[in-house]
Length: 120
Length: 296
Length: 161
Image 1 (spheres, helix red, strand yellow):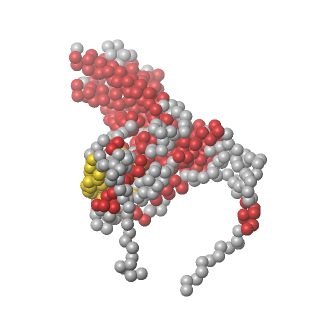
Image 2 (tube, chains in turn brown, red, orange; image 1 turned 180 degrees about the vertical axis):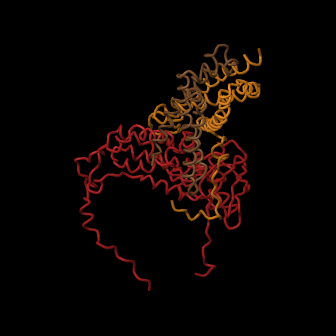
Image 3 (tube, chains in turn purple, yellow, brown; image 1 turned 45 degrees about the horizontal axis):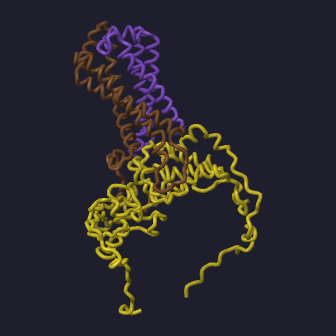
């Protein structure tokens, strides 16, 4: 059984990581792009400059991993505080863990499809 | 005793006639609830004359003695020490005995019981869940040699005393428990009062029970369900700062868990306290307490 | 915990719930507003993440079929003032949640909540007038500044030019 303080310690650390990578994410959509935001989401820019660049892909993947944990652990905290019926805690823990893994795998598919050459 | 001889109970209402004149009449909008008759609490209005020093508790007792004797209100010391008269006055957690009616600057004083604890009647809530949580965090000094050294003090520096002295002012009134946003939905959350006391005894240099208390507070419904809304500290009528204590408790769990678990408690003083020693008291104690006399 | 005797249906549980507890704002202290905003922003940004994963996954069929228009059409349909207003809110919420999270992390590390004092009338709890409160105001200011920049990027250079 994982201690609650361990879970929350990870919550804080992932939060700090998200702050850094999130700033990078926002920057990559605005002032790091030639022409600013109106240009940022074109297919060429997104695929050739971001997803196919291993460094950007790694940063996005790390961002996704941290977010999957942080968001679904946050939801878990909210849900645990909302209700305390018997079995609720376990149901919430299991559902949120599965949802975090699902979100991570689903996002990973988007990021890594360009490196696996369409294998997914 | 015949009924006619029975002396009528007489409530003495402070008679301020000739000493002071009521400054104004204030409407007390009091939450009423009778579990045998009502399904939901409702408000009833009473008109109460207010003097310069009339407190909300004085007003409620005026209602009880003069207007409606069925009003249930819990109080004891009337001077902000016992913590019995915690209630919500004009939407804010307060001790009724410490709240001057005129200081509220309002012609309507709304009084209702504190939140998040089961309502028994009128302004009285069931404090048992609150005290059960207080007990759960073991609010006493834990160490192996506490029985052996009862005739001498444990040494503690003023700095070590200052670490927890503020938290000893807690009167267990339940106002922080009522103000806390987490207790509003989480019935198992220990609450600001219990967590603050857990910190108060854990940080006490005489204590060696950190490991036991960490097991209790490091729980899905323990210290981590505090999100530092600070409502407890804002509500406290004694200047205790539960929000501070809970953040410090989190700090201990995050950074000093092992150090606290293996910390050596303060040593006992060399000086034996004067007076009867524990051994003597124990010797003079009967082996068995006498049973009460059989009824005749 | 054993159920207290007053837990029968006769006695109201008297718990304030989400609206009366989490979102209670009457007489709320500053930190309580920050707490409420932290919950709200976390929930909204968290739900946005799920929508965002679904939205960006559209680039996979675009890449696999070699038809860039699958992606570009979606981006075109989201290039509206309404969608950008939503993004502006997400940006502001994300920045706020992140910065306030730093404040909470510092508080849980014992930073910015002051030192214990002996309470003296009139009581002013030390944790509510320490560095963390200034930090709260500072982070609100930073959030507003960064939101203004997001407004510039999302509206000024897209719709106003």
